Image (cartoon, rainbow, N blue to C red; front, side, top):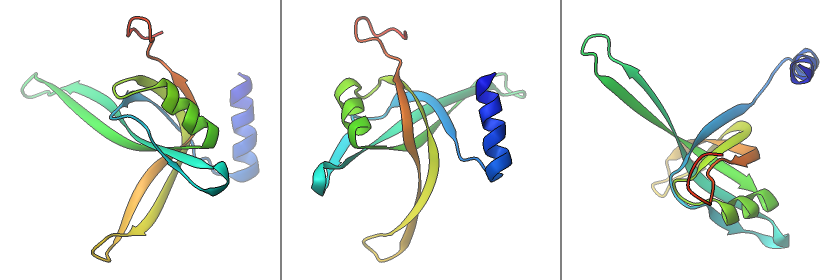
Length: 130
């Protein structure tokens, strides 16, 4: 209940909210990139799955969405240390869309989730979700 009160206060004060919550599996190991002054970022793709039954064919249809995650500094290093490709994680963060210039000089856009919090859901003992 306390979270709902805090959320209402944020919405009343600012009028906007940028929050993402995902549970999914890592598509690869986290790639760490280091910069000067001991800062770093970690980047990885996260797969989330949805499924439904097609009303016409009665077949199960599966849809996988891929999300670009970005971790910063200690959160990046800690996450990279404890999770690997295929592990199930929960993340909270915010959406960011940025543009960059590709090798052919065209402008490209990428939407990323800037991770603020992460929970490791794959048990390292037996592979089960904890």
